[in-house]
Image (cartoon, rainbow, N blue to C red; front, side, top):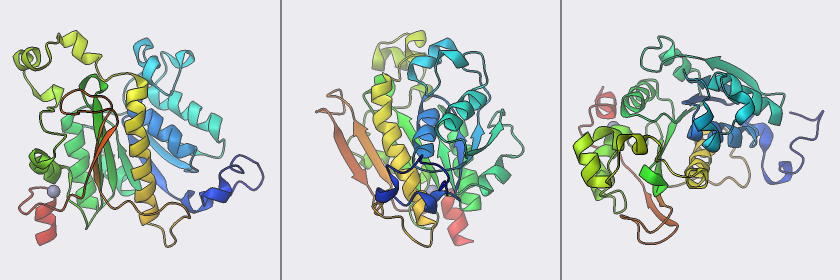
Length: 283
Ligand SMILES: [Zn+2]
């Protein structure tokens, strides 16, 4: 691919770009996380994207988004498509300005994807996509940034191997670094005050600096490339398989982290009796 231009000449000797070109990636949520992962994947030679997001780019998004001020007021899917095409005009993009919770074509879209980049900011959409991916045996990678960007986590669902997102939630108490971190959108306003001493308006703007998010999007991208490579007959060179399917990353020494740049790796196995993936295995 791309022999007619020199786009990938600097990375081609290090990385079999062509092997990845048939893969299709669904980016569910094109915000700060999803946009950065999509851009990284485009720069790794991924050429087929389904972009799914219902929102427009607002001024406040720009400081943490792959798209800059010139795109304010545009749909995020269109803005991101433009940025991706600016990196590689050979990229194929289909945009869906849809609400994930109500979009009737979602299952079909998941089925057509080699891997789903789960980059939404709320639990209901994460669990819906988890369920659809388990049902269709489609790999997904989900990334989350913890409040105030103190760190984050990335989980990779590998059909038939590891557990699913519901399995992960059941085992979180066993994770050393994840302990004490609670999803901000799941706790009551009162608890938020107590736990974080933050006003609601402050919480909305609290995922941290783009540099904090970028550590998580880098892991997210790496796991996505690994998920794609696992579907190929031939493993691309210099892309060895990632053993673990879950990492927790700490950006700075704020509880539960004690140092800068802490990493915990976990191999999550399917949990017996999981209501989402357990049922499927016994069918
Ligand atoms: Zn499960």
